[in-house]
Length: 181
Image (tube, rainbow, N blue to C red; front, side, top):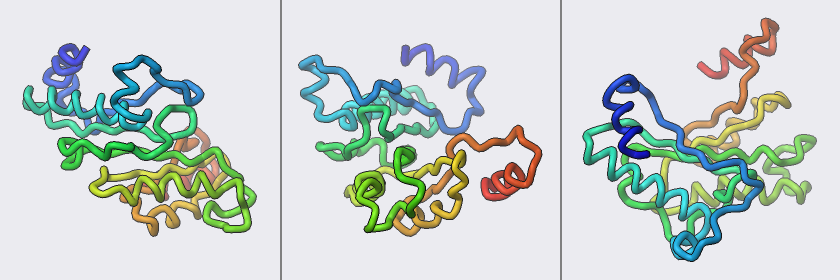
């Protein structure tokens, strides 16, 4: 599969920006085979996959950035137990989506016990040393663009929206488009 991907990236997709490599929305269930479990937790396994792909891309001279994903519906919620592979640090990143949270409170409101683990998730990823660049996505469906600066203050390089409603032609869509710029 990597060979086919490399062919596309050297051909039709040669001008491609970042390449998203995300796991399945598996409800937090991952591979239980002995070989994968030996790699560590779900995040270790996902970063191992990205690292192996990065090696293949580098060998083929393909310079596209890789983007991994961290969120509740996958096995990548917890920080990796074995750290980040060195070959991912130069140009790759992960997108973190702590969207399964209480939107009646700010994500960092200490009075909301439900939000604590969801706000801690990006903080834990940011505190990794060394670490990948991190984008933290907010769910725009609930119109919480004011939360994006909180993630930037934590140290996320790219606070972003998840699923912006660009097809609507109202004030909300215009504000989302302006914030995206």
